[in-house]
Amino acid sequence: MKAFLLTIAVLVSCAGSMFAQNLPPDYAWEVGGNIGYSEFTRPAGPSDLYVGTRTKLASDYSIRLNYFINPHWMLNLDIGTRKWETYGNWNFNGLFGQTLTPRAVNFLIAQHAVTENVGINYVIPISTRYNTFTRVNINFGATVGLVTTVNDGSTGYSTYKSNTVDSGQMYVSSYNYNFGIGYSLGVQTGITYFILPRLGVNLDLAIRYASVKTGDMDYRAENDAFHLLYFPETVGIRWRF
Image 1 (cartoon, rainbow, N blue to C red):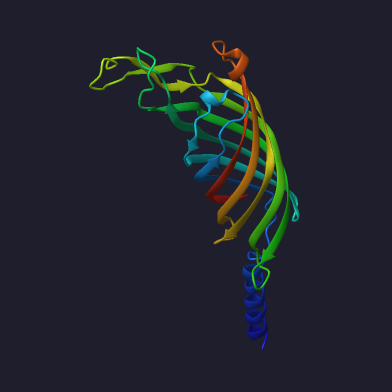
Image 2 (cartoon, one colour):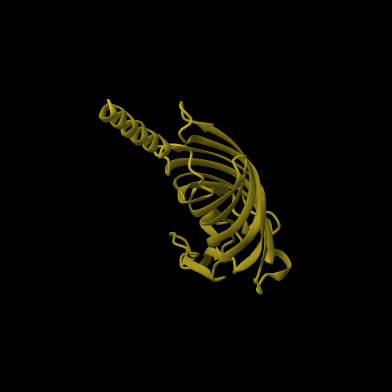
């Protein structure tokens, strides 16, 4: 009988130990990375000659660090980069004043638009069926930070080709804004699904406003500052510790 009771006690002890390992751990930190796309508006502020008429999707990359004050409030650091470029057409005249066929031109606003944002988020945690760990975190929040645009301020030229006397005329085919620095603010939402207690996959959406002061010396009156909206849509991974 004593041996039987001892065996039962050992089994109960082991089962309790195994169950305890599945209790919700106190993970206050998350680290991860995101990749996706970012839409953006044409820049406002510069002359219409230098903002283009259309944009296209830009690749968006970021690294993330999150700190949970408690299960419902989270602080986050987001460092990301993307390329801002617009496209349009130059309308220019020939040697005798006649209007020539427009030529395509690209406006490189930022080869790298690097953002360093901090945010605060309200979190809705959803646990697993038996409350062993948080399966899903849904967050809504606001963010603010710095924007640094990396660019060289150069201008590119091409040769106009035609069967007329204007063939060989030079025209501007690319215009690069100069480097700049400014601020960014916006709102964001996201959902993280944890496959394992520590490992999860993430979807983030955001709307951000950026205002940048550039170092443009050539066209200072018109192109020394710009602002735009951009909309990161990314997926990523999260690791809790």
